[in-house]
Image (cartoon, rainbow, N blue to C red; front, side, top):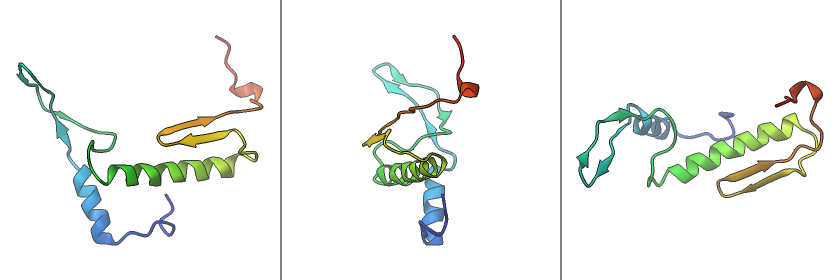
Length: 97
Protein backbone atom coordinates (compact mmCIF):
# COMPACT_ATOMS: atom_id res chain seq x y z
CA UNK A 1 0.00 0.00 0.00
CA UNK A 2 1.39 3.37 -0.93
CA UNK A 3 1.85 5.37 2.24
CA UNK A 4 1.17 8.78 0.66
CA UNK A 5 -2.15 7.68 -0.81
CA UNK A 6 -3.70 6.59 2.50
CA UNK A 7 -2.01 8.75 5.07
CA UNK A 8 -3.34 7.81 8.50
CA UNK A 9 -2.29 9.47 11.74
CA UNK A 10 0.41 7.49 13.57
CA UNK A 11 -1.84 7.01 16.60
CA UNK A 12 -4.57 5.40 14.47
CA UNK A 13 -2.03 3.10 12.75
CA UNK A 14 -0.71 1.99 16.15
CA UNK A 15 -4.26 1.34 17.38
CA UNK A 16 -5.09 -0.81 14.34
CA UNK A 17 -1.83 -2.77 14.68
CA UNK A 18 -2.59 -3.30 18.37
CA UNK A 19 -6.01 -4.74 17.54
CA UNK A 20 -4.40 -7.40 15.36
CA UNK A 21 -1.34 -8.20 17.47
CA UNK A 22 -1.46 -11.52 19.32
CA UNK A 23 -5.08 -12.37 18.40
CA UNK A 24 -6.40 -15.57 19.92
CA UNK A 25 -9.71 -17.40 19.47
CA UNK A 26 -11.50 -20.45 20.74
CA UNK A 27 -14.59 -22.26 19.54
CA UNK A 28 -17.58 -22.26 21.87
CA UNK A 29 -20.30 -24.89 21.45
CA UNK A 30 -23.02 -26.62 23.45
CA UNK A 31 -20.45 -28.90 25.10
CA UNK A 32 -18.12 -26.11 26.17
CA UNK A 33 -15.23 -23.99 25.04
CA UNK A 34 -12.36 -25.42 23.01
CA UNK A 35 -8.65 -24.74 23.17
CA UNK A 36 -7.37 -21.26 22.37
CA UNK A 37 -5.40 -20.82 19.13
CA UNK A 38 -3.54 -17.97 17.43
CA UNK A 39 -5.21 -16.15 14.54
CA UNK A 40 -2.59 -15.20 11.96
CA UNK A 41 -4.69 -13.96 9.01
CA UNK A 42 -7.98 -12.28 8.22
CA UNK A 43 -9.91 -9.43 9.77
CA UNK A 44 -11.89 -9.49 12.99
CA UNK A 45 -15.48 -10.60 12.57
CA UNK A 46 -17.95 -7.91 13.62
CA UNK A 47 -15.38 -5.13 13.81
CA UNK A 48 -16.46 -1.82 12.33
CA UNK A 49 -12.95 -1.46 10.87
CA UNK A 50 -13.02 -4.77 8.97
CA UNK A 51 -14.93 -3.50 5.90
CA UNK A 52 -12.68 -0.43 5.67
CA UNK A 53 -9.49 -2.50 5.91
CA UNK A 54 -10.85 -4.89 3.26
CA UNK A 55 -11.72 -2.00 0.92
CA UNK A 56 -8.25 -0.48 1.31
CA UNK A 57 -6.60 -3.81 0.52
CA UNK A 58 -8.81 -4.54 -2.51
CA UNK A 59 -8.25 -1.02 -3.84
CA UNK A 60 -4.50 -1.59 -3.83
CA UNK A 61 -4.78 -5.08 -5.34
CA UNK A 62 -6.88 -3.77 -8.23
CA UNK A 63 -4.59 -0.78 -8.80
CA UNK A 64 -1.57 -3.09 -8.99
CA UNK A 65 -3.45 -5.35 -11.42
CA UNK A 66 -4.30 -2.37 -13.61
CA UNK A 67 -0.66 -1.33 -13.81
CA UNK A 68 0.40 -4.88 -14.75
CA UNK A 69 -2.24 -5.47 -17.44
CA UNK A 70 -3.30 -3.19 -20.27
CA UNK A 71 -6.95 -4.10 -20.89
CA UNK A 72 -9.21 -4.16 -17.82
CA UNK A 73 -12.47 -5.15 -19.46
CA UNK A 74 -12.15 -8.57 -17.84
CA UNK A 75 -12.09 -7.23 -14.26
CA UNK A 76 -15.33 -7.64 -12.35
CA UNK A 77 -15.61 -6.68 -8.67
CA UNK A 78 -18.69 -6.63 -6.49
CA UNK A 79 -18.61 -6.50 -2.68
CA UNK A 80 -16.15 -9.20 -1.60
CA UNK A 81 -16.16 -11.09 -4.92
CA UNK A 82 -13.64 -10.44 -7.67
CA UNK A 83 -13.24 -12.02 -11.06
CA UNK A 84 -10.36 -11.57 -13.46
CA UNK A 85 -10.89 -12.85 -16.98
CA UNK A 86 -7.83 -13.37 -19.16
CA UNK A 87 -8.33 -13.21 -22.92
CA UNK A 88 -4.81 -14.42 -23.62
CA UNK A 89 -2.70 -16.64 -21.43
CA UNK A 90 1.03 -16.95 -22.12
CA UNK A 91 2.05 -20.55 -22.89
CA UNK A 92 4.66 -20.44 -20.11
CA UNK A 93 1.97 -20.06 -17.44
CA UNK A 94 -0.31 -22.80 -18.83
CA UNK A 95 -0.18 -26.15 -17.06
CA UNK A 96 -1.44 -29.42 -18.44
CA UNK A 97 -3.44 -31.57 -16.03
